[in-house]
Image 1 (cartoon, one colour):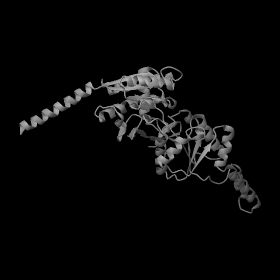
Image 2 (image 1 turned 180 degrees about the vertical axis):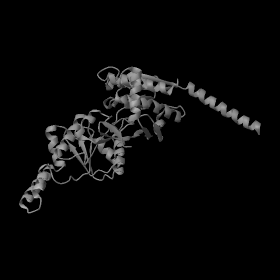
Image 3 (image 1 turned 45 degrees about the horizontal axis):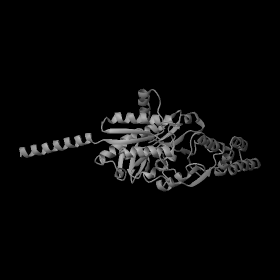
Image 4 (image 1 turned 30 degrees about the horizontal axis):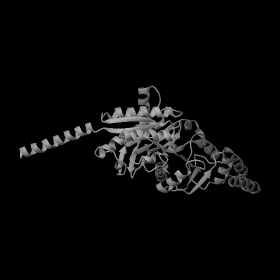
Length: 383
């Protein structure tokens, strides 16, 4: 019996050693297509540095990274992608920008992990790895449920990401009362928000009530009138929350218009999309609290600190995503018996990265996100 056990142990140890030797000999070649030259070169260089951090963190000599320039040009992107393919590389992180994807369907044997968050009309061999609208709306849906939010309106700019968000509404099955499309032009925006919030009707309600009180014999009517005269409108809006699918100054223009029409974030939930912890939101106290889905802030801060300590500069936001993508490729390669092919992203897999959880299935990637609010000069985690 003892001899039998020793034989089993011998074969187990031998098998482990063989696997370790094979893993050591098998190279995991990962291409990297980013703008190294041109107007977006700083983004590309930041991504390369974050990939170096990821490789050092994994600490496995089998990983080899092969960076190539896109120069933010679709033709140059294709040319350098072909060079990577000729070197036997079948998995490439990049390109960064959606417009550089247009010719990459020529390389059907190569899988590109683009950093874009757009998923519509991409070539079949492109996997969008950015935080897409579907992942964000699914997270907002969870927030709706936790807070019993039932009357959400969604504001979408006519000019940008209209189709992406419309598709995400269907995929996420989020509960939306009504969708409105607006012009980013400030001269048109305010009038549109006035219509959406029925501002003039509520303003008229106030005037009518003041007139009624003046003609009435009600007790303390003067006190009531003075109280009403301090208000801008009378009557509630027909929604309990608003999702604003915009960013930067456009987002602030929308919230300003809502405040102008007497819609306050103290009474109505102001929700937006991933803001990457834009610190300018903390200065806009009149739009607070404002809620949004995003990546894991604690890990993001740690990454920024490590990056700064290593390179004496601060990273681009996309660097954090590219850092995780190296780990994702390494993990899926091990799951796929060290074979790099299309099957890696077809199987259902869950990868816990620094920015959050990556859900991989059918050549698509979605993210399980955290949820935050900007309030009192701080970003507070809700879940």
